[in-house]
Length: 351
Image (cartoon, rainbow, N blue to C red; front, side, top):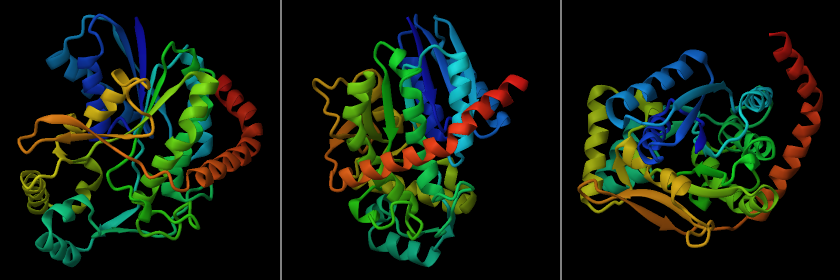
């Protein structure tokens, strides 16, 4: 059997560990193609080198292991269109698609607020922090809310564009959205779906992911035979926020994570490998007959780090509004990009 898995955000700690676990958990005799995505060629090559190195040191797959890369920026609609065109040229099908988009517009940390929260409640401070400073009103070059487009609308458009030509060609295609534990309904205002007025745009984007999944999974299955699941990785060390931490604050953060876990938090996985547990379960083991697509599947662990799956409910309030907004916006961009399709084909033909 030949399986193809496309992982967005492959260079992240979570993206790499999803790839590592695919090497271990896809039957070793199967041919496996891993398609990495990045905004730059050096980062794409770096991700492939790391995955190859892991296979040589740990997985030792017997079947053929191959790689491809796609350069794509989910905050750029033309880039998304170009990526889809490249995928259609070079692949007959995609079996697994992991939507691991996690862009923020962070500006730093409010250290005074962080100190207060940690002293008052270290578990809450490390689970639902309010001390991360995020810029407000940041737009992409396409004129959309940057975090809204990069984390939700861009990936949604990508899935819709890949549904018929590639995903539907798989005998059992899976789309796995990576949400977050930080996706409370209170983090999203329906008067600001593009998150341009929000100072918690990252968290709001993950609440949108939850609602978008609920609004689309049935339609994807009816039209294209695609099974879609919603997951989250819990809390783990992420590369995206390292620039705001020095060695002292980094190890302080790690200590706080371990304390939270000892105090009974199931979500402080810390390890990227453990964080990838739920996405891999949804991809390789979940079945709609006994694993509801209405739920969110979270990576969890015990106090000593033993991983397990924790399933939670998702508040569906507002999913119909989100469905309509995204459908209307997709139609607008279909119209805006209709001439770009032929231009993109010409660019690639001439290159």
